[in-house]
Length: 238
Ligand SMILES: [Zn+2]
Image (tube, rainbow, N blue to C red):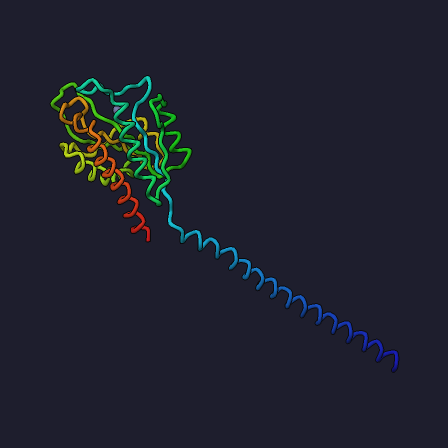
């Protein structure tokens, strides 16, 4: 009897041990679940914070031509490369004051930059927008006005917004927003437009375009257009 009861006791002890081990296991797995929830919460929170920060848009301003590529011959004999650089610098300076933008230029002096390198800069940066600035040229010096070019359909709303402000500022004839197969536009991975502010071959357009006041007004308008486009897009995203 004594032996039997000892055996029974051991069996009971063994069963108890199994129950304890199972209980500990259950508690442990629950604890792991809780700690994984806690760590998930902790990893989610900083992401929420970064999402709250305002987005900074990378913008590339491209002063057309430069160096060995003088661009158009103006009515006065002045070359396009100087005009595009002067206006681009003004646009750059104004955009830099806007906290929502991070601004870059394809050239900051009178040097030659390949078209491929201009667009590569924007693509490598994964810039939101590439804006190429030019002065137009035509054999008939009577032709005048402002044109904005795009290639990819995605760029149409951006081109239209900038053009709307640009035309008002130049006071030139509105020659519209047009689709053009230009290298800097077709090879862009993101928004890309090219502004032909006015015709340097037209004496009246050129006189205006070479004046500092007209350039200031034009630069302000371009920046307004860019700003409004991105502000509208943020509103639609919300
Ligand atoms: Zn040009």
